[in-house]
Image 1 (tube, rainbow, N blue to C red):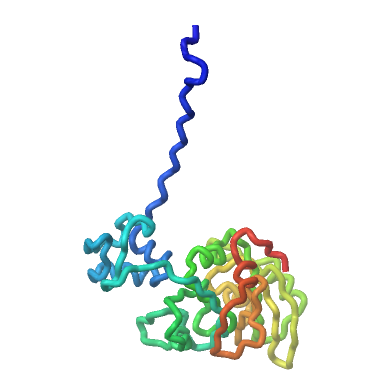
Image 2 (cartoon, rainbow, N blue to C red):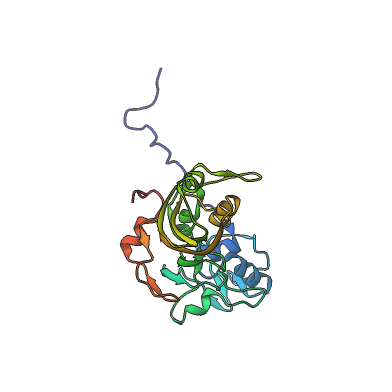
Length: 262
């Protein structure tokens, strides 16, 4: 027999919200757009970071910027306004904030003191040039560099020698390395001289020195390598060594989950 009186049933117990994930302090500083994760680790170990007034020297100490006050050199850290840049990287510059060999870096081109810390979104090696993205939005950047995104990147490549249909076929079929297969998503002939050839090569994955190693395996030396687009963002007429802010539409088009159709 049910002895509960009508109208006196207990209200349903509200489901508890899962606790917000807590990340290491160095990662939290990076996600806030303060600096890179490596730089954050150095700041923490140097004793320049406090959490709720307490000096913290452990970069992996679980932290939450929403419920804790984090300060660097006495200044409270706030979420930085997201900044998204496109740069035309010249050949000969290193994509690094601090180079152990004291080589010139792309950061010497960021001459606006109003810019916050910005990290490179992906890489271009010293000998390569063209479109490079930089941002302090680490979530956006991670979505672009995630191999699962299959985001297409297009390059103009000058090689020593004359390309033919067989070379293009081999680039599409791929070559086997020690533990990977290197191939192009698309490739076409742009122009050809007496000794050199310009190709347009599109990749949908980003392996280290991908194009250079692919062509070397097929017997061709890369003379110049210029990235001309990342997804729908094109280098266009941006002067060498210059940079510009991305348009809101360009930023949105590169967000994870957006259509990659070109």
